[in-house]
Amino acid sequence: MTYVVNESCIKCKLMDCVEVCPVDCFYEGANMLIIHPDECIDCGVCEPECPVEAIKPDTEPGLEKWLGINAEYAKIWPNITIKREPPADSKDWEGVAGKEKYFSPEPGEGD
Ligand code: SF4
Ligand code: F3S
Image (cartoon, rainbow, N blue to C red; front, side, top):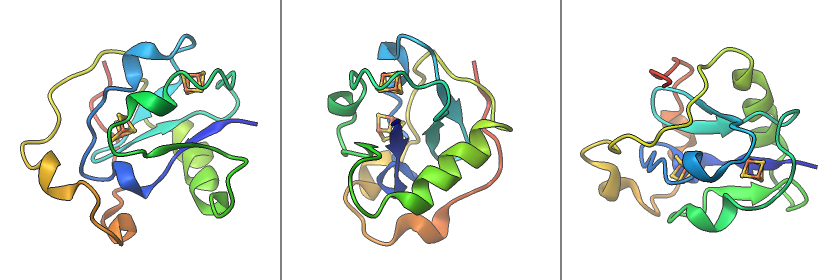
């Protein structure tokens, strides 16, 4: 089992999640973060930290695609453990449906 970041994170990228993870397993893309499924110890601490409920246990139905994306990009995106400022328009994207089309495969800055 692991926790998974889903499309709700895209363009919100609030980064409240990164500093609570005891094993530093968040990785940064250009417009979202993801969790390395082989590093996550399933502690669940990050789930309530995300204001837009983008973090879910992989036991929830319908997350297969996002589990694949988390696993794939955790191998190539940089690690992030320190919160930075979210994007200036982050609030505009909270709760917006259909954000998957905005997914960027480009890496973020990392720490
Ligand atoms: Fe890190 Fe725990 Fe969240 Fe996994 S569930 S990403 S170990 S804080
Ligand atoms: Fe994304 Fe939520 Fe973390 S919006 S960056 S999963 S706090």
